[in-house]
Image (cartoon, rainbow, N blue to C red; front, side, top):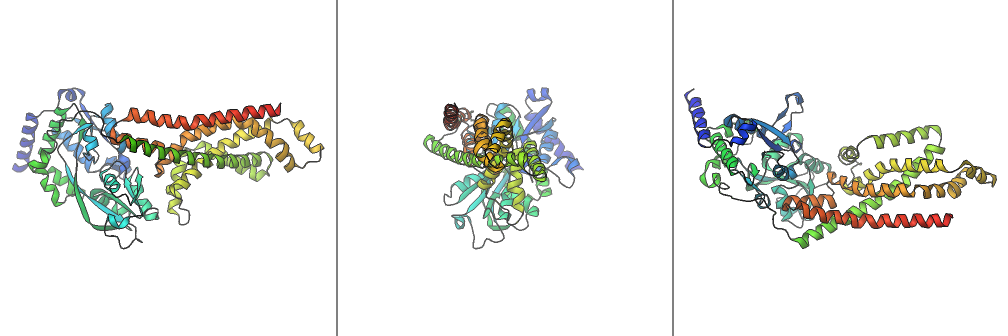
Length: 492
């Protein structure tokens, strides 16, 4: 009882020395940004009891910080890769989500003293043998969470094909499915997700040493100091250790959180908001590669969509009744459900079935072509229906069969009528091709996102990326209009 009273008095004294900035007292709330999609052990929903709300060691930490500072802590959902930008926009007051104080981030925001010391853990699939570390994975695919310290470490091994994921769960899922040889993740993540993936094999001992810190905006040194004081109290009274032991995260290295060298590591980091250094030559090369991949995926997907859409339209108009029903069901299903859901189902859903595991590019092309084929089918159905009945009757009078009438008379005219709307659909698909980045394809938009997150140059890189999209789409639109005018002259 006396120990508890002493801890409370110590906490009250610390807060009195470094009070929370008055602007947050007036607001009555501190908004902390994090990404629940990242999963355990940070912030996640308990699948066994989803009605209990979000749990995780950072949820507990935020609760304790709010209790010490005497203010409500309210979580704001934000993608992990964009936490710094969400913070800079003012959508949250601090970012706490296993955020490593990398050099590029430190050029844009302030960081508090570390609240956790972590290492890296490499895990491989059950069929992978002879691997003792990253050097043994040259020539193989290794998954990693984008914009993380693990991502940075993998980029230092050019012989490894780095596969970037939005979530460690999907990264581990692809290891189990055999799409990647292994995955590199922070040790707390590897430990927390192990029950979900018992087939994974940890390789060697954890290595490296990095920190999780809380980020605040560059000009808010007073908020940083208040959070530093609160974290110091939580370490001093054993609350941090209690939280970490609850989540099986306490390792001997955490005892060093109280050392002055670590506690003061970022205390005097008087950064100002700005962009990190960037090699523009290398950045343009990377964007160019992304643009080529976007072009290839878009062209192949649309060719398949055109062919499949025409078949679906012909079946719907001229096929036997059961096939007509199937064609109608296909069109309504693919148009009535989000393409994002379709893409995730094709890649991750089918990936759980042996023999149906598609690589990311194939799944992306298939998803785009299946989705846009439904729209093309409606375009062609309208164009086919617009051909006057007299055309069919004349073809029949000349002795042409139904198939010959379609091939030589009806379909050529319908394709001319459908050219303009099909061109619009191709431009739309060209832009929608960015959806494939959710299944690990690094195309133009994903490349832009990674470069912008690393450097903070969202405007300049955004303009360059937009210019690349325009440079690819405008010539295609021009050629389509020219082809349409030529058809009109030939028809006249």
